[in-house]
Length: 63
Image (cartoon, rainbow, N blue to C red; front, top):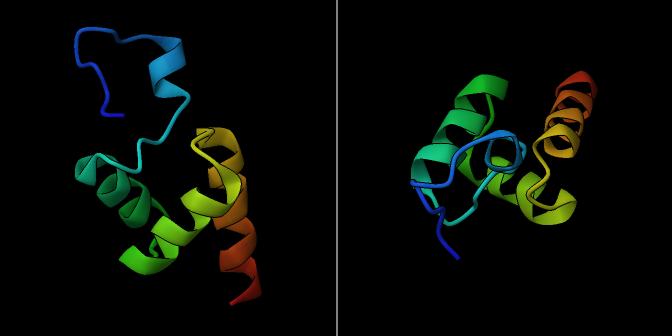
């Protein structure tokens, strides 16, 4: 389900919408990840931005 651009706020900012290319692109650039790895992290850890950020940071430390 795509983001509803008219409904913004804390709940919207707390999620990474895998269906929205610009959100995945931002997440990928923020953590210096490949597009495939960014999508993999979001799929594995869900759309919760905090959990996805933690997983990305953990991945970067292991590289």
